[in-house]
Length: 122
Image (cartoon, rainbow, N blue to C red; front, top):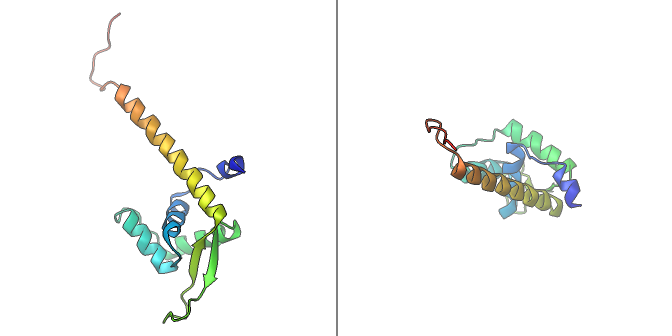
């Protein structure tokens, strides 16, 4: 199963942000867009077309499920979405992959010489 998850990696930025936004709670579409903006401190903005296209793909892959309307919600058009266990698994695999990239990057930057440094002579 673990190898199956890795075949989907790396995730696109939109997919990563949608899954991450749903990891905390069930959200409706506009709530997902707001959570993505909050988590990225406004650096990544997810438009409605991109979000709904990606949500449909995530639902087909069974990483996200549509819950439909919530009782008491004033807007009858509002649909809520939930991260599934499969979605959580792929999100965890992507987070682990990204953590390894960051570790490798930090290690390489610590050993890198500035570009204006003169090579050492043996």
